[in-house]
Length: 218
Image (cartoon, rainbow, N blue to C red):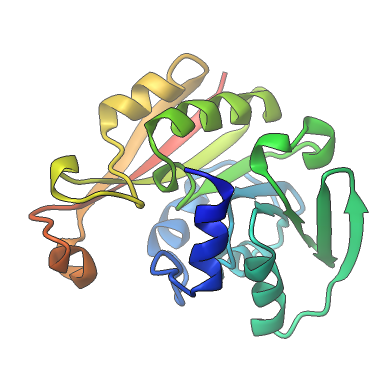
């Protein structure tokens, strides 16, 4: 899956993964993470997610990374925010008080770019990537995070033969395989969401579960 795929999706406004409402799992389970106001929270592959505004409103310093300039510009425009923009190596960084979005390739991100984060919020990052890139994504994420960093991870689990992603099905065993070598993994919830996702039923799915995990870097 090349960069051009995602650039084209944003150009054509084919962004069914974008949600207008705040993710309910974020609202329900975030308090179970030991994160204090003022701590830095990382949102990888953030798109123009409104979840970042929720985190900002809860008093966190939020930093996202997003490949598409259209997504970044739309986030600030649609939320009536006027960012300053600066160059940081391979990235253009748009920022307002308490929030930064790095526009560029996640895989080029370095620990010095990100700074010391206390938590990560991944709703649509891991599931956006095919299997080979999921391995690379998790490997790169592990280089960016320090011990005791917490991750709220939300995945989808559906019969892979019934639908071609993205979003891709990421089963519990794969989460364990990817993260357990360097994180403690706890499944917080598994919820049947197919009836809420009519688009996926139309694409032929017979079942879909949304899984929420709490991970802690060892």
